[in-house]
Amino acid sequence: MREGREVALVTGGSRGIGAAIAEHLAATGRAVALTWRVEREKAEAVVARIAAAGGTAAAFRADGADARGVTAAVDAAVARFGRLDVLVNNVGKVRDGVAAAMGTEWKDVLDTNLRTTFLFTRAAVRHMLRRRRGRIVNVTSIVGRNPGAAGQSNYVASKAAIHGFTRALAAELAPRGITVNAVAPGFILTDLSRPFLQARPEIVRAIPAGRFGELADVTALVEFLAGPRASYVTGEVIGVAGGLCL
Amino acid sequence: MTVAYHFAGRVALVTGGSHGIGSAVVAALADAGARVHFTYHTRSEEARARARREAPHPLTAHALDVRDPDAVDRLVREIAAREGRLDCLVNNAGVSRDLLLGEMADEDFDTVVDTNLLGSFHVIRAACRPMLRQRAGAIVNVSSVAGERPEAGQSNYAASKSGVNGLTRALAIELGPRGVRVNAVAPGIIPTTDQLTSKNARLLDGGVLDRIPLRRFGTLAEVAAAVLWLLSDAASYVTGTILQVGGGYRL
Image 1 (cartoon, each protein chain N blue to C red):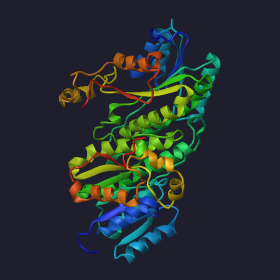
Image 2: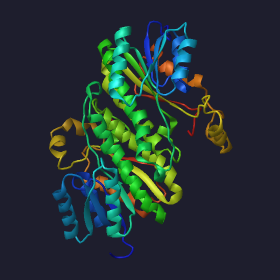
Image 3: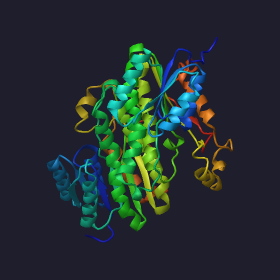
Image 4: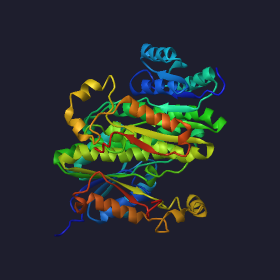
């Protein structure tokens, strides 16, 4: 490994926004570790795409339900690339339902979104504290700040909770040279969301920018927060939602 | 126009009502004429003493761990069946375990998030059922200024309380069309009888009053007043709001 190359760990990097962030951070010269839980082949395809573009990446399996496994994955990434500069907590899921009838969806969403963020952050911060340097970027959602639709109490609570986690850790880790911020995307076109969103022109009309977001809109913000120019930015929740305030 | 700020005939449930803010809310609701049910987790002696002391008011104490969804469902069903209705819910049960991230065990994170956030969800899910049937109800979640402006060492607590704020906003949207209002109060530093000692003395030494424009800590009665206002018909057009009761803390 080339001396001085930064290392970024992106959780949930096998597809969607996570894969886009992994590829973008690799394109900016960082070695990238990405984690996957189910979709090994997709994760390996992301690694292959990064390698084909001249970058360096490796995929590691990690399941947020297994705290020790999360720590082991982070440690394995650090062992592979020698250091850890950037953590992007991107793992997340949605399972909507009305509150009066909500069962396992609540804990499933809270554990996947909030608890997994806690586990990866705790494991990563141990490495960052040694070097008194680090960047943590949590990918949340604009609904964590401005919920829009009924039936998302679990998802909104999980994303709002990550915002609080972000601010508390920013206060805690700023004296140690580690920044902690959140990016809160609005409606972003991904392979998964594109068919749904493009069939809903009324959603576009509610977005002041007049268009859905692209993956590049999100990755540009993550890159800024992960980079040297954002060294005085911490504890912020930054929307990337085209002005959407539902 | 006369504004109703009384609770005669109303049935209220307050979680974590044996001491501190919850206890002040219980007393204020009972004084305002509500039939009050409150829960306690560990402090059964205090809870029973309180129920006896307030004997002239209809006041009932129940043991409950809000992390246990079946126990929550059973208790709420029992109260609604016995009283025939449920009008007010105050989600106050909460814990804190301040620790730096590196020293925070899984269990420290889980206990705080499960009690404060998951527990609030359990009780709302159960309580909103009778409220939705009535097409009326008022829910107040006791959050904290730490939800928006946390200190170092509070990553679990801040996550739980900002999660409660999100839950409040999301459920205001979901339950509003059915006549149920959902709000939160976010208290600042409110010394309770068992907190008056070391922690607040440390805060005072640390110059915390400089960050509170009103230059003093709040009282339990001041928090209870805000909770009662949000529960009352005086706030009948207010939903989805996070009302800070913190003397302007770090504005």
